[in-house]
Length: 264
Image 1: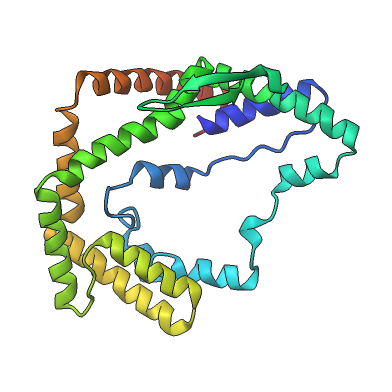
Image 2: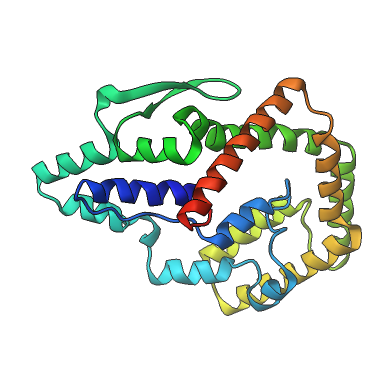
């Protein structure tokens, strides 16, 4: 869906005789997001990947050490815009974003309000991809809010801390003392990313593999998935209505994306 909107933005800009560098989401990134398990950030990482590189902390740490600040550097799109003379830059930004007077107020799902660009190629692309700017906000902000509500119910279920405790006991029996997968992810990630040594890489791989084995032994992911399915059947009418609306928006956006021969 994001990729469809980026493709449409590019076509709109090209129609104005302007260059546009789209930023596409990868299929792997989209798949990882779809596989998110509340409380288990490493759930999407398979055994083969863990045996080869742990969770990926070491690789990212090495890359950061070799190119510090690379993630903060402007991308191709930002570099291009910054390189334009002032008058051309103004024309470019007007075409892509529209005028400030074209900002539209929006109500965020759950609580709060915001403003979104209603003019320019980005807004036009979002309307085409999602059906309307309201639908775009619903798909992006609303889905995050809904997922948070559903995950909150899952984590409040007594079965959730029970299976986490089983996982923790299994890990402790093998010398890895972490109260939860979240805690492991954050503590180990910080330690290895900050000091990506071969010894730390070996530790990361050992920990990741044992984490996988313990998760399988106590049926960690399967239990949480079952809780997700259970609580999804008992949501409020308001939440069910919002899920239905978002599902329709997604269906429309996917249809548009397929017509453009893009994914995501």
